[in-house]
Length: 155
Image (cartoon, rainbow, N blue to C red; front, side, top):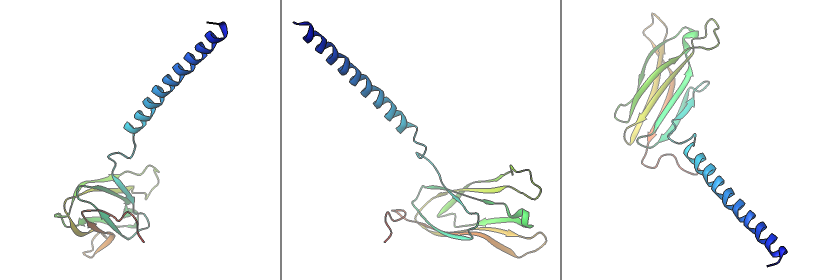
């Protein structure tokens, strides 16, 4: 073998080794990205600030969270949540304290639900003024739980 052929073989060997190492590195990175998917097992979250009512379509077993401003700064108290427990269940209610530290900022409310079975219900978050019997619907979510969930494409 000549010196020229030996050099070509060394270059070929170097590039094939580099290509193999590159493929191993890329497969490790890509498989790592799939296992760190931030959307896997996530809960659908809706910020209801500025929204009084909305419609939502989900499938059985899905989790959903609603977050909104605590209306205590406007002089209202929380007066319960109404919904059909056969269709959806309330998993957690939490008051998130204000981070602003400003007087009159009462923080936020967060409700987490899980759909149970196919059906329709309205989730109504009720408020009322202290000392009054009249309750007010602060937020209304019209929920449909269907076998297929929301349509993939709406025409």
